[in-house]
Image (cartoon, rainbow over all chains, first blue to last red; front, side):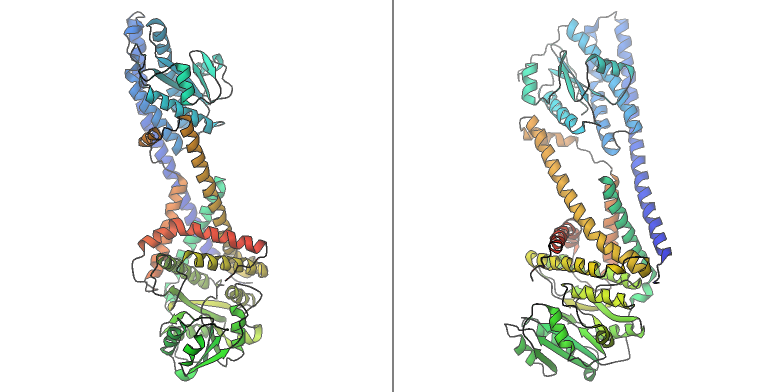
Length: 227
Length: 400
């Protein structure tokens, strides 16, 4: 029987496995370190949001005087950082889910304030709820998110977008999903109306009655969708 | 699907590391001895329409550092339609045989073998230019009675076109890989210029005329009979290569066809009974073309998917291309394990190339051809493999 030089194969196998493990370790290290950065940013936003709620209490409900959107640039930055983290890890990464969870709560908090301002302060800004599913319908969610980003960029004074990942669970977001009867994301809620089919830019402009001149009558945030 | 990609990358890394480890472990064996023994050698050259190359080939042979009375140079003119015969006749010490063309080099070689009287037979292509020290180096390998044949390192002669320079890289890495296979007694490619024991030919026959890859068949036959095929990295023979894509395509399709023909014929060599040959060399010879084909199709599929997705995104925003370009500012480079491994593979390939570059005395700048070889040419090879494999499956031999 011809010779099989096992020792050399074992050495090559060990070195190959080592390189693989180093690759995996590097990926995990980068993702963890990035998640740490996101967490720090999120903490800042959380503190600011808490401050806004307390401000509302102190002002005795004079909500029209609250500038809800000063925190939005941080929230926008946070959304993009979460997108990058998702690309570096995978949809089921625990750090990503935790951070997305917190992002959802901060978005919801802002949405509720904006909704009340719209009702009480005669503000014409259109808040859009965007529910996406990055596990079952990732591609469709990305397409819809791209269109929503576009609409925001074209009409930054008229539109605010709040994104919620249906795979992230907490009582508040779950209630929001249940209230709006979301079963098969991506779905969009505009002024209480649910849209389940893919909406392109033209559709959204018609629904929102948007024009290039804009019709905003109050300050609106620079909030972008996460997807 | 990504699991298969990672498996292929793992296997590629494994083979690359194995090769480099073997190379470094056997550094002292890289230097060939120079034989003081000078047995009679018959140099057999099949020639078909080689009027442009044959004189140069013969001139180089006559410059070999070897006793002229121990050399027998035979050119078999395979029904050339040009002035090959006339060119050969200018060399008085060269024997010219002429026969009708039968379409395959194997027939020509076998015809010539009947006229060889040497103890060793050197089957040389008509466009191979030998360096003076090659033959003595090759002869030294036969001190090992297990060696039935030995091949020199083949490099590209005077590369001018871009495609020729890319093949310099291909041939260099090929030489590296064959050297490693020899160190593991698993070398199987007796291509371009094998020096063979006449006794082996007498006992087991000349080239196989039923297969397109007769050089690979010879190497596998040598292994199947319990012998080894040597490889001398520092015994260099230069050859001309196709300078245009169409010619390269035809040649590589032929090689792939021959590969699968011979792997099927010598399928019994797979397995633990044949040591490194059966458990490593042959399996990777089979797996890698298949892996390349798989990756090629995957890349095409992913590219089409990306374009389709991009088109869908654009259609959602009324084809506002300037916005789409604007969003690229948010593009961030993210870490991917597959990219890390790809970089590791490229680094290994670079290391292989540099390990042989000096030994093969490769001169000139090959940086751009190297980059092209790694990022594009290997994938083009995938197309060749697909066509060659398809032709083999439907039993339609490729044309010359």
